[in-house]
Image (cartoon, rainbow, N blue to C red):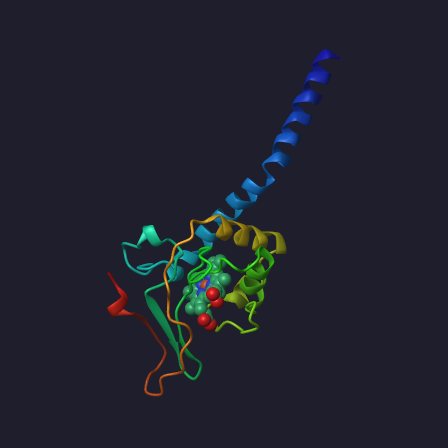
Amino acid sequence: MRSTSLKLAATLGLAAALSACAPESQVARGQYLVSVVGCSDCHTPGGFSPHPDMSRFLAGSDTEFSLPGLGVFTPANLTPDPKTGIGTWTVDQIATAITTGVTPSGRILSPAMPWSDFAHLTHSDALAIATYLKSLPAISNQVPGPAAPRQDEAGTVQAILQRSP
Ligand code: HEC
C-alpha cells in the first residue's frame, strides 16, 4: 500500500514537472526539427560551406537563389531582430509562413524556401519551430529582399561574394 502511494506520488510529481517545463520542451523539439531539416544550410552565412558562421546562426544567408522567371531570393534572417529579422512576427505568423508560404505582409514566399514540403509538418511541430526561432538571440544582419528575375540567367545558387567575410 505504502509503495503504491509512493509510486503514485512519484508519477504525479513527474507529470507536474513535465507540464511545468512544457515551453522548454517545445523549444527543444523546435531545435531538434530545425537541425534535422537543415534550415541552417540555407539561413546561416556560409551554410553551404564547410565553415558556417555560427556567430550568425540562422541570421540570414550570404547565398542567393536565382529562379528563372521568378526572381532572385536570399534566405532571410530568422532571428528575433525586429528590424532585420522576424522579431515583430508572432509564433503563429512564423508557423503560417513556414507551412503555407504566406508572410504577415501577405507576400507568398518563393519555392526557393521549401514551404510546400514544410506544409507536411504537424501544427504542433510548426509551432515548436517558431517558438525555437523566437528563443534565439537577436542578430542584426540585413539580407537583400527579393529582386526581379535576371533575363540572361538559368537557375543558379550562388554565393554573394561581396557580402562574404
Ligand atoms: C533550400 C533553402 C532553404 C531551406 C532549407 C529553408 N529555407 Fe527558409 N527561406 C529560404 C529562402 C530562399 C527564403 C526567402 C524566400 C523569398 O523571399 O521568397 C526563405 C524565407 C523564410 C522565411 C520568411 C522570412 C521573411 O522575413 O520573409 C521563414 C520564416 C523561413 N524561411 C523559415 C525557414 C525554416 C524555419 C526552415 C527550416 C524548417 C527553412 N526556412 C528552411 C530558403 C530556405
